[in-house]
Amino acid sequence: MSNFPKVLESIDNLSLEQTKNLLSLSSKLRIQRPNLKNSPFQHCSLTTIFFENSTRTKYSFIKAAWKLGMQAIDFPVNLSSLAKGEDFKENLETLHHQGFSHIVIRTSDPDFFCPFREGEEKESPIALINGGNGMVEHPTQALLDLFTFMVDFKDDENLKILKGKKICFVGDTLHSRVFHSHLKLLKLVGMEVSTCGPKEWSEGLTKHYDDLDQAISENDILYMLRVQKERHQGKTELNQLDDYVQKFGLNLDRLNKNTKQDKQAKVYHPGPVNIGIELSEDIIQSKYYRGYQQVSCSIDMRAAILALMIIHNKNTHHNINKEEVHEWLK
Ligand code: CP
Image 1 (cartoon, rainbow, N blue to C red):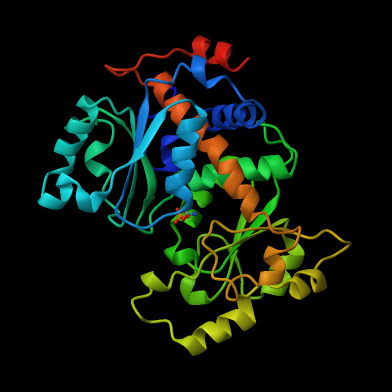
Image 2: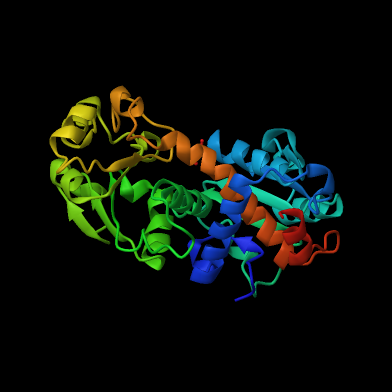
């Protein structure tokens, strides 16, 4: 495994050591405001190619690029030559020759990244990052969440405090690419993962709770997932949603009633939230809700991902070494 993958498709592409390097650089970037005029990254540029909608992922990558002094621009798919039928690989070559160093891609196609995997016939000329592929994975969301846990639990990149912490993913785990990336990442770092929700949304991959009250009382972290109606192919009726809210919706009263010895679980959500379904407004307004902290930490983690990709993958346009970056972040 190289020091950092050129195509970040899955958490499987990362070792524990690479994950710790990301956490360490994210921490540095969170506390420092380096001078952008001296940035070693100022000739690097990012574009975001999103075939599905996004607020958090797309704009946090753009902000992350700005944080490193990079340039960043969105690639509107419908106005591009892709909409005229141009092949994606041809687009990649074009963007490479225009000098782009990174592309973040969101797609509904689970196999989108297969042709660009290491050892495949056509190596991508540009660093590629999976910004969510169907129900398969959303690796950068899992990484930024881990960084948020580290900040919230006052841990460091060796993860001594988080090791053994209990996290329960509540809700639509079956359709959740966020959950699928977390399952790999949190096991890699030694956290105890469980799920809670309707049986038909459980893949049987972890310990499962049918009862949210029990999950609240036994876990340090409740990670609430969005009910993804758009992936249910019309199978979810309104009365089923009412039933879901009764059984698995989290509100402040429920959190407080099931908390033992004032040890309230912290509540996370990748967003966007269906307010009134998986989470009530009073939880979002409470100190236990960490969703906006996730949004804020996302910029540091995504900047760390962009930086390590460029440092460790030499490219015809950009050649930046670790020492230069170290000097810049002093
Ligand atoms: N969490 C997440 O991926 O949100 P967006 O769909 O807004 O990018």
